[in-house]
Image (cartoon, rainbow, N blue to C red; front, side):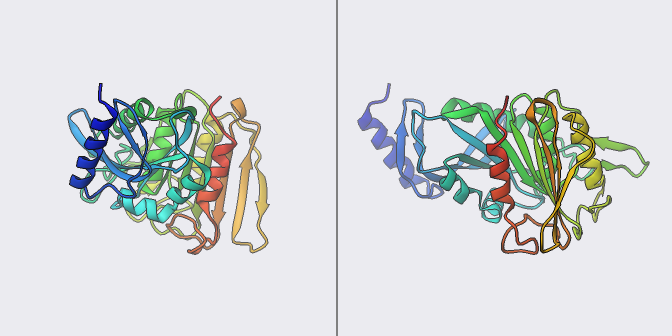
Length: 305
């Protein structure tokens, strides 16, 4: 077993050698791991493939309290760093005391393998990657297993939909920014995510002027299923009532469709932005709205039952 002195020497050496570790401050040590506040670049090998991710630990982390965990997945051609910046999720994690993790997809350009189109069917087992990473984080950190969430943008949103379906027994809810549950092949056949075994609360955001994953179906690169098709999938999977409660904000740019009466207290909410494009909604872009704040509020209300 490592002594306190040897742990300190190990940390000092590793920090001197690894300039990718940022905001280094030890807040908990065990014989198995050292937990550092802020961002650290990490890696894990899954099925013989080295995979990387950024782990963000909030200042309020300690060894006695189990915290929520939020996966945040970047879009096609993006990186862990880009979605961390775009979403502002790390600042939210520090404010609300949860752990955020930003995995990196593989490929050139990087894309998550949802296996829903030729564009994303690259043979990489990304479900296995996220499952393996979740296993590691649950082993190494104090994670509240009832409050594990996943969200993503574009390709990362499609992957989040897939993870919600495949890991419905582990994820409490998912958040979607510009995503789809499936695509149409040139021969007219449809590839769609599988039906989840358990209900999964879903909060989704999409702009009507999205020029990549079209709101009403189609896309600039892939023939995507529409937002209505995606929401219909989850309303059915979660056993929600058919008629949504509709709310339009005073600026007329935002409409909210909320589906309640779902199994096990789940819920499906769609935020539609009249002037929104292919973007993570924020106060700094066309949406003038923080998807990050709304996602976290939704997650708080939906622990796993």
